Image 1 (cartoon, helix red, strand yellow):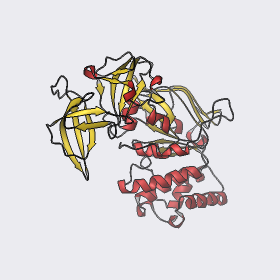
Image 2: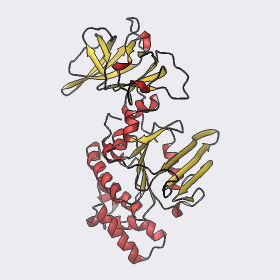
Image 3: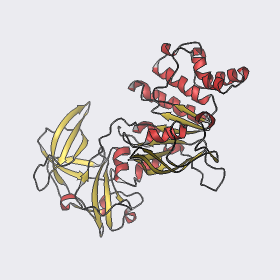
Image 4: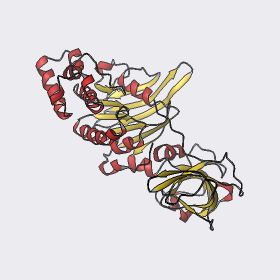
Length: 402
């Protein structure tokens, strides 16, 4: 996922609290799932309010798609309960849940017209023909596909097929809309435009939405809240702004922001990193202020675009690094650099990717400094044992999630 800022932050909705009003549209309590001896989901607790857009993000195999299919009614949970509009839907059949589901492939029927594809779910529910036509016309207009009703899916572009699949899910007037990698089948040049269109459609739809995506810019651009998953567990759930700026775990910073993280210890206003690298806490930004990170284990998040400074010669407070690779990126260069330990290069050490206006040659040794606001400090996760200062964690290698 490429670096992006939380563009959705300015349009946040505040999720309602349990007991403060109507129940959330969707609520999961202790939902787990096992495939034989393998646990795919561990006691997931999650709620989505009416009109809210929630993005599920995480690496391949983290359980996102399994969770989505459980909500859709395509997979039965091994444990826990699923509530829709305050009613227990754990064992309810898929077609009776009030859930619209758009799979990654769109799953349009090739032998049916656009109009018949959209109306298929209504026909299966035995909705009267006149009402069916009215609702089909409404979603065709909403998705700007009114003039394409008689066409076959094979006559449509990728973006048009995406709109038909979305219209088919919306026409049943779902309480919950599920989108599995909604833009992944589109060419890169179409995604930005379709993301804006999708955001407008979701704002007009009177339902709650869960989006599974591997694209960080989709999650940050479309969602009101983000839920980050790893190994079948929810690691952090919060507003786009909170997850971006105050990650609760190193993995969240690595996966969502593409950052590098250092395990560290805070000692009397000094942050101790690898190789006894000591920097004043005031050198860093913090979620609130430096006082929010007490003495003890912490982790340092380095936004690789704006958190790193390279100089030809090391200066006080910097560390020596070696340029591993340099790639031209138009007016800038993308450099891979590796920190040296006691002046020695160890290929096993993690690497940082840095944007530079200077074409430093591979093999050159430079001074590397960390700077605010691109470098932040955060308390260590509660369940983490105190890590030894030293192990820098590079960004996770992210494959395409499932």
